[in-house]
Length: 556
Image (cartoon, rainbow, N blue to C red; front, side, top):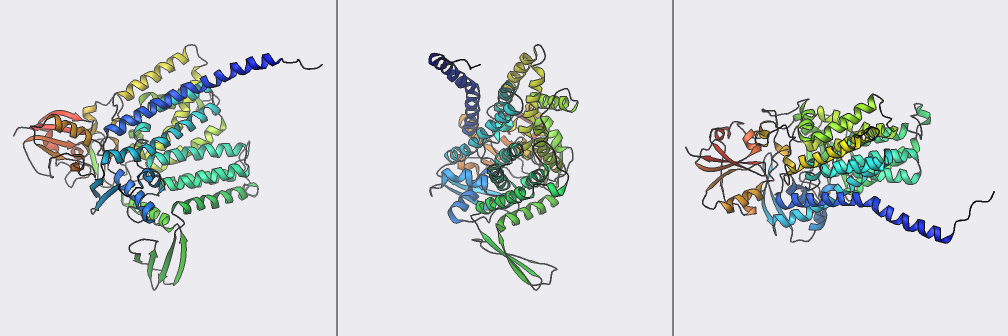
């Protein structure tokens, strides 16, 4: 029997109906993306440069202008190079003065606010890309409704607004870990050489984003060996050796390109090791037990040196503050689980745990691709728990987009229940209202169970106060011109760069009048004496600026 003939008028009518449907499909995600950008812009306009940002930007400029990866080589260069792109004109300058255990920014030209707009806007683009990837993954793994729901949670997540509005490395690492996991499962479905090349590119960029991504790289290569389209291969003779080796080599080439194809030299002679790097002011020289003499060239040697420095730093630990206790080395095993409990919005945390529980109890069928992707945050969290860097939620930020996918699983379960979708829509609205409590100071967000005035007693540093409050302090000073301010500020930027005139309050110094103290200094996390500013708590606290600067009126 011949198929029915479709008239030209019918085809035209169907085409006209399809085009609006496609446009409508993209309308809601586009509106959400716009809301996200507006919130990021609000953050950028109201928050001063945080502690690490000026050095990241300065090192990016140093690399572009002089091909040098020498100072503060504790991060790979990808995010630094990316954020410095709009600042290549020589008029943009940042002067960094090295201190024994820190750094101090003495000059930013032409001005810090315009510089922040340019550099931070590049991070916002990365945030938009992550949002699209999360939406796309939820759409493919579950449904379009789940994807839109997950994106609605994404755009009102304080962590994802703040850390993708800052010129630092945490956002880039979060994006590329998720991108690597998604590219891996797509490669599994169609392991062509084109997708192998794409996966290798993403893996190389991931290594260039942050040193903590190295275990994720090893995990991805292991999965490439073991995975086939529909099963896990246990026989080593049948593993995907050829494509995995190709991905390894191509990823290495990407890393080498990120260091401008620099070649370093490592020489051992008479028990002395000498490492030279292109454009470094001086080599690294140290004694070794090896008495053999040899000399080798090392592509991207700066990466290896930076990774070695990170391991050394982690072994010695870093000063940290946790639930009222100061430690010189950190290392609390409960630190990051508690940080997630306090810093993630309650709705996102609850829904992601619900989705995970439903999947584990087999109340909901979860695609195998999601379980493969979940191995990335599982390994990352385990390594973070046993690390000695307890200085901020940003160090487990890569878990967040994966958690959103499990919130999408909760949507799939709820839509099978009468009224379930309505409940989740109300929860998404509640999540937005919760996030807006801290707007635009999203970096300082704590869940509703933590009174904002008491958050400094639980966590500080980049969880609460990362030096972002100078613009708020400048507004306060302009509104209270009669007050002489004494300031204890936690941040690398000299407050005078923002036009603030205040007496620097040293540890142990007692003064009268208006005293402003950063929350991190009030906790004592990085001070010689953690109690240095606790004496202020007996005086009247009149205001909290930008959730991070505490204003006291000292009368005696």
